[in-house]
Image: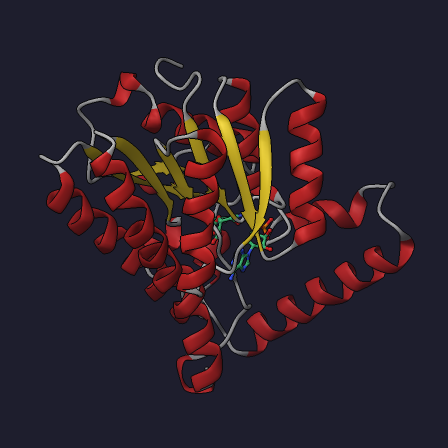
Length: 278
Ligand code: NAD
């Protein structure tokens, strides 16, 4: 990818899944990476993977819903590597199926605080630094659920629709100020958050206790879905007939940050095996 070498990227939610692969991809492209997450052990593992492959990375424990820790993330990037050109604001949670009337205030506030407010909090800290140093590129992680409604996943879908709107608005504000802002909308991707549950259940290196927990969680979700008569369009067929690998999201992030995407801003790119076309 053009234009990533010797620059600096921050990635939130980089202790696993899409964020980990995004961090690894930035490093493969020659960027210094600030790996951030609430999960210190997973975050340090990501740093080890990058360093073992010859890249540069540092870990900062960050809760994206806490503006002070997000500001520290940006400070560490600039203090350690001298600049901040790229950000992948990716941290997010999915809390499972719930009817509108069953979502508690606490569940609603938690999902919106992390998935939506967290992206705003990150951009608020990143944008002034990028503008002052002459430019940058940001990619936010939305979701296919940010483009279409998802029965039983209203709070998640609402938070991700918010990320799409926030991305467009920020892109307009910064279009003539040197910072491009886009989002990706992943379809079902093999990570801990969703379909990874299924694959983990069938993979042998997973300890037996984890496999039992995974199986129980899956059964619980299926029963809940059937009992509540939810439209399971959330898991509707993928035209490419497979779920995504997190590396495929990382490729889209690297492209959107690269100079090959120099005239692209304000867009949400579905990376979904064709689902959005259906
Ligand atoms: P994941 O669970 O593997 O990764 C999410 C990471 O975010 C975890 O490491 C977690 O510790 C971290 N995190 C959670 N709350 C945080 C907080 N408050 N502050 C900082 N970090 C926090 O799952 P993933 O699939 O890699 O998820 C990454 C993003 O992709 C999320 O925003 C998710 O909504 C989105 N997404 C995933 C899928 C999918 O099918 N996997 C589909 C669409 C969108």
